[in-house]
Image 1: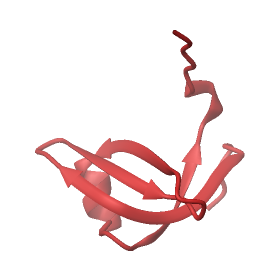
Image 2: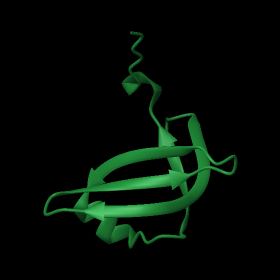
Image 3: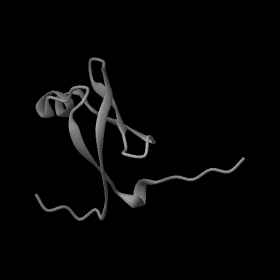
Image 4: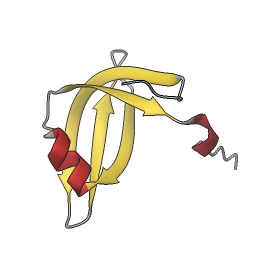
Length: 69
């Protein structure tokens, strides 16, 4: 699969929490940091995501927000 996004990191699914419509997927990176993604439940089901799965998080940089208090 070819994607236009350039930012991709590999990790392991730490947890998947699903409700009726959405799923929250927490991915642990090799250095111990985590990335949390919210995807549709249908996508999570189609990918058959479970704890321990090796996955890749693809980040579209145009959607990153930064805040400083």
